[in-house]
Image (cartoon, rainbow, N blue to C red; front, side, top):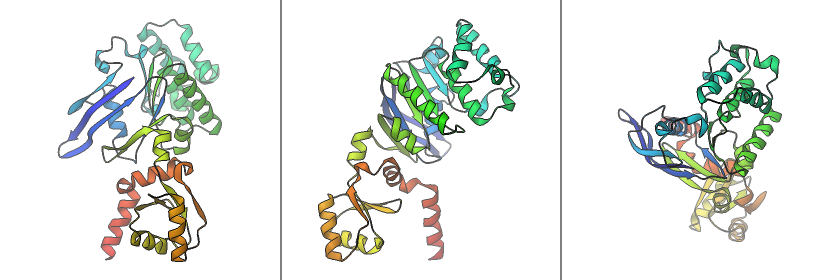
Amino acid sequence: MITVESLTKTYGGFTAVDGVTFTARAGRVTGFLGPNGAGKSTTMRIMVGLTPATSGTAHIDGRRFAELPNPGLEVGVLLDASAQHAGRTGREILTIAQRTMGLPARRVDELLDLVSLTPEEAGRRVRNYSLGMRQRLGIATALLGDPEVLILDEPANGLDPAGIRWMRDLLRGYADQGGTVLLSSHLLHEIEVIADDLVVIGQGRIVAQGTKAELLAAAGTLVRTPDVSTLARALMDADVEFGHAADALRVEADPDLVGRIALAAGVALTELRAADGAGLEEMFLELTSDTQRDTQRDATSEGAAA
């Protein structure tokens, strides 16, 4: 289990992580989501001792990463697949990790087979690997010590569709056997398929967390119309709260009420349904709309134009 309590990291006058608190539980996959620059990678680096926290704590099964006597046997980490030594072969990288952890030599071949790197590929220098091959090697290194916790930052980068499905099945099986998986990814569909719990961060702060079912069920009503502006005015006149989500509106009311408001306003609807089936992308965009780089740029442009 991973427990993060009031974690804060500041750089001068900039706060990258601001009072972050959440738990990733055993037997579950926790999706860690947020826009670029939201604080995901910094939080993960603090968890594994690469970046010191300004305040707060991050514990793995009750201990700080620095207190683990042989960390690779308890937590597997993949933060940057491109950070591997480019001049070594894939087999050499795994062999060094195997010897460092005091594992039997057979583990190297077992993990190469698990991540589907062939003997020929394992003998290549990493500088000649594709990004997808580096991801597979990074996942093999993370799993080498058969740890109980996995912390993975964007592990699907560079994987083709078959590779993404392979990774999804691998991590799902790992969690189903009692492991803890903390997974960040910008591929929201993959998170939606695999995650049990979600933690959403924006501008260094947690903006939502809970089970995937809870967060999606609390999303209200999804409605689409060619005349968004008229419907938005009608909802405001009815004192019904709503937000923009992709090309739709997410309304904090049941579909029956939204339909009656639209009818009274003479607005034709192309879609009207409970948002619990709308998917993770719409929920994510709404929760992080104030922290999205493109949204901020649009707002700046509008201000300049005014």
